[in-house]
Length: 431
Image (cartoon, rainbow, N blue to C red; front, side, top):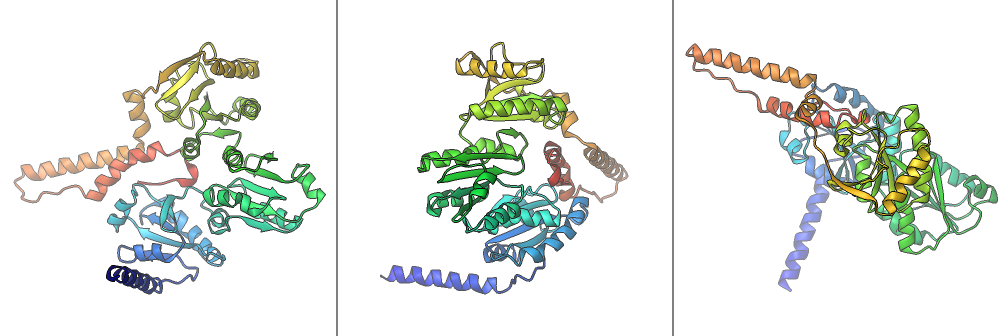
């Protein structure tokens, strides 16, 4: 009994402590300035808080700052406000180290205290539209045609949208909670036949998925049991053919299916876009597999793991480990009739005519060329000059010895990681 009283009293004291700390912060539409003394209490005070880890000398940070200032008052007016804060990571190095900040700006979104790196748009209006997802209801209830159309329009292009027509919201509620970070979920309670035509379904109940960014739509008519529903949701969290980036790799790796990966020279070329159309047709008929494509120009380090010395484009089956499968006599799909070659590749895979291969690593010169950008060269030159200066002082018998600043050393070591992630344009960073 004494133990229970003690535990309850401790919990009450903790709640009181948290409440007292939360009173220090208000949702007034201004960007909060955080440091070591108030960071933890700020994170505990808000359900959703976006934190910009910046450095005063960083050009990208300077361009981001006014966008955050403009977005903050809009996000503060949401039913579930989202607060924006910033930390001078160059000054408060312990916080930067705690959250693995090695390039600027690094933006973390804390949802109920749990951080995830923000890689969405940085312009104020788009940033607001993107972040609204995290403050929205798990499942929105829509009661008219106009409510459905408004919901779709306001959701924007950043996340897939699922709309249940003639469904009880409890049926998809658990998926709305589980996949809240990845998609919008809603249930339409009242709608017309015109809306059925607009969203291309002819009977109810139906679950319609929309992916505005890729102009894709799919409809599920049941059975509305958890296993089948979740399969449909997971399959439609990604487009039929996924453009591989460091961000989409997270989604792909979280999916349990193997990946049919097509490697091209440049994914922006017209012939690559035409090939993608053929891959979409194959993906529609093979939903047990994830289809993806990657350009050597866009992600050389990743693409070259699959031995790009052979003619491109080429196809492999990857299980997200360090091994992948090549199909005998179907590795390269260059030529005119690529549709037939894709079919032949998939048939060969299904029939087991495959060769197991292991990731190949880059050559030393390729790695050096890729990892050391011009800023790294400048830093190396600076460090060498500093060492020569120190040596000259030492030879002169001077007792004064200068050492490189730890922050400078950290910046030098972190520029390699920036080179590795430079393909992510919306998240440009400086070391």
